[in-house]
Each structure stands twice: as structure tokens, then as C-alpha cells.
Length: 417
Image 1 (cartoon, rainbow, N blue to C red):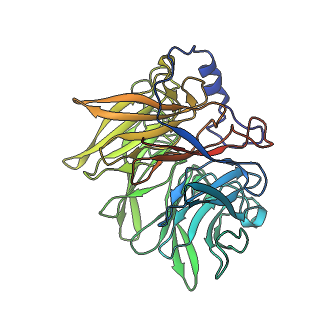
Image 2: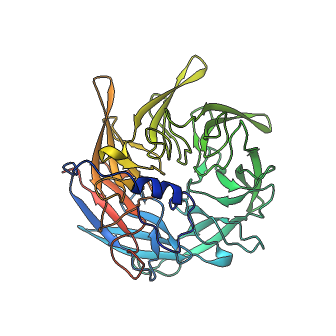
């Protein structure tokens, strides 16, 4: 896993993880891969550098994402005939918010919502929540004209500080929810809500983490169940200080937290940093960034509801010594057949990260490496997005071309054919 010198991401450049991975020899040749192609090489110009989140589709089949370096750029990859054309939509920076870690989501009105980890007009530079709206009557390939509204600027206190890798999420009433890595009542992170009010947005913290049994430092985002409860992960705290999976249940004007699982480390992984995913049956899936077999490679897990409680199951402990991926920062995605896909920051044939697949066969989940990253992109922070044909899309933070040390990152596709 390679990290650019100006990267401020905390987990991806953890020196301890890199040192441990470097000590373990590679043992396996790359598995046969589906066809990988680079859709765009980031150049550290108008298009930015270091695409940190994955990508998301609009209804027309175009892809959207953000870059981290050069303060951050929101970009579009337009699908025209058989080509992909990069269109920078908005350059972030300082008062507009800077260094986004999470991705963007499409709102009910077709505009885009996201967060930055830094910037804003507050003295602390504690991050913002922003909304981007497209220009009116502007040619489709003109990169200027998008308008940004700052919905909220964090002050670094009880209201939260430093939105992390998780995306925002809407409830059915159009309110926004997210997490911050720091801040809150105890300085250990918070879950916040943004409610429309008098033409603007009002922020309220619905839960502050203490860093103890309830968890702390929530890097990942949130997901709703059908009953309106929220679920997420923390990278610290819990019974063993290895992080948690938690549920927040509304009760009148307050929210009550329940820890569904506390991570121990060797047997189940530790430091989950992802946003969880529900399947159609109501099971939750996620990844743990560290822990596991060698205490560094991480795990993929499932939580299944059972008679009012939740059963935790490890689907796979990643094993760097066997040539598998290591250190999954993002969550997993499920295809129509029930297979799980994800990315790892390290591991694989070149130790530059992987795209992996878990297939449920005869009562077991079987791991396979779909692609091992190398010069044509490396260190994928974001997860996998699937289209209707089963093709995979995502980004790699570094590698490729551009003026950055080690390359400025790429957007990629892995075709199903």
C-alpha cells in the first residue's frame, strides 16, 4: 500500500500496519482476473488528486466522486458512447470546506450532498456539510457553474468535529444524518442530524460517544433499517477497545444506543471503519480494518437478527500470508446473486491493495481475489459499486499518472465479461 506524502488520512497511512505487512512475504500468484481498465487518470490539475471515496451512479449512468488532495474536487465521469470523460464540477477549499474523506450522495432533488473533514469559516477548520447544485441551462461538458451551499460548519465542540469516511444518509422525511470522528459531548465523536428549518438547516447531535463501552471515533457512516433505526461502527471503544457495531433507536426526542458487537481482535477483527450494508433479509455486513489472523489483515463479518438480538459471524479472516488482501477500510457490496465484493488497502500480489469477492458455497464463504492493484492504481480507500450488468467500479487513491509522488490515483472498471 502506498500513500502520497501529503495525505492526511489517518487509517490508510498507519505506520504500524505498513511495517507489519512489509515483514510478511508474499506467497501466492495472482488469481485469474476479470478485465480491468482505467476510466480516468487523475492529474493533480482541475480534476484533483487522490480519489478517496468510491463512485456513485446517477440515473443516466454517469459516475460521481470526490478527490482528497489539492483541498478536494467533486468530479463527474460522463459515459458517452463507449468512452468516459472526466468533468470537474467543483473545487473545494478553505471556507468552502476541504479534504473530503467521505463520498457524495444524490438528494431527492437531484443535487449532491457531502462532507469535508477540514475547512469552513470556523477557527478550528473542523469540516462542513455541503450541497452542490448543477447550473441551469449550461452545456453538459462545461465544468464551471455549479453552486455550493454550506449546510453546516462544525465548531469542534459538542456539535462534532471532522466528518470521516462515511457518506451522509437521508431519512424518509428528508433529514440528513452523519458522523464525526471527534467532538461531541465527550470528544470521542458524534452522530448528528440536519433538519430543514426556515430555509436553512439546523444541526442537532443525537448521540455522543464516550470512548468506553459504547464505542468511540466513528469513521464510517450510517444505514437505516425499515423501522427507522440507525446502525454504524466505531473504530475504538467497546468491551475490548477494538471498536463496535452499534444501533441507535429513536425514543421520543432522544436516541438510545445498543452495542451489537464489541470487537476483540484475533478471532473477529478490530477497528471497523466502514459503513454497514443490509441485505434483503435484514442481515448486516461489514469489514474490520485490522485484527484477525495476523492482527493486521482484518475481517469480513455478518450480523443476523435473532429473537430480538443479533448473532455475530465472521465470514472470512483475511490472510496476507496467503496473498489475500489486507486492511479493508471500506464496506462490502452485494450483487444480485448474493456475492460480496470489497476492497483492501494492502495485500494482494503487489501489496498495493485488492478487489476481493466472497462467494457463499455449500454453507461456507469462499474468498477470491478479483484484482491485485499495482502501477495502474493502488491503495483503494473507497468500496465497490456495481452496475446492472455486474460490472464493478471504484477508485484507487494513488498510482497511475500525474505529477504526484507515486501517481495521482485512478477511477477504474472491472468488467464482468
